[in-house]
Each structure stands twice: as C-alpha cells, then as structure tokens.
Image 1: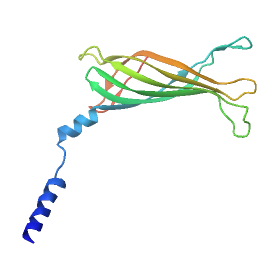
Image 2: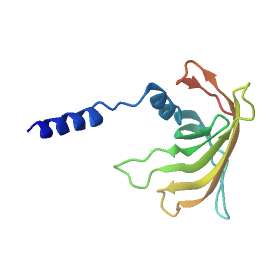
Image 3: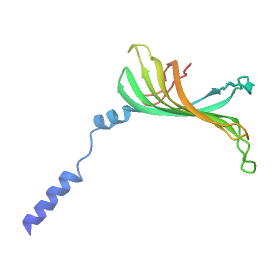
Image 4: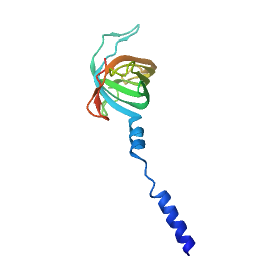
Length: 160
C-alpha cells in the first residue's frame, strides 16, 4: 500500500506539477505571427470578344506564419475582392478574384524594422455570367513594409 501511494505521489508530482518556464512560453509565442490587410484590388480583362478597363474595389486579406529568425519569416497569405457580389436569387450574377500565396518577409537590418515581402501562389477568378467563365493561374506579390511596435507582441506594419 505504501509503495502504491509513493508511486502515485511521484507520478502526480512529475506530470501535474510540470509547467513550462516563462522563457519557453515567450519563445513559442514570438515564433508565430498573424495579421490582416485592407486595400484595393483591381482586375483588367481582355480577350478577342471583350475588353474591360481596371475596376478598383475593396480587398480584404489575412496572413500568418512562422518566424524563422529575427531577419526572416515565412507564411501563407489569402486575399480576395468582389467585382460584383453574388446573388442567391440570380445565379448569373457574381464576379470575384482570390489569391492563396506563400510569402517570405526579409528584414535586412536589426536596427531598422523595414522588411521586404515576396511570394507566389495561385490566383482564382470566378465569373457567373452566361457565356463567360472563370479560371485559375499563377499569382505573385512583392512589397516593402515598416513595423511600428506597440508592445513586444503587437505592432502595425503598413506595406506598399
């Protein structure tokens, strides 16, 4: 009986009492990053039968990933915009563009929080109009940004 009680106390102390240290928690949280983006999306269509000029519209996106080091992070970016909203009562209405991209951000220096973004992935165009069709293809992104840090875990980074 004493031996069983000693084993239970030992198991309880080694499994229930084990907590990660604060340094381990902070390191795990700092390794991940996430964000959102608001901006403008444009699409110019041209073929033998149609030619439409660029139509700017509101675009929304989300991204996130893993920080490899203080100078690089990799992630996934998803964004899209509507050129014409879909209508459940009229299946011939609706036109949209969306992208799924793998991205990498590179910080060239430790002193200035400037970074450069590049990436590529899949673009999807959907069109519900009669006689027209959607399609898929390759997409790419590139830009530069500057991180304004509010705290160790929160910041704002406009990207051009």
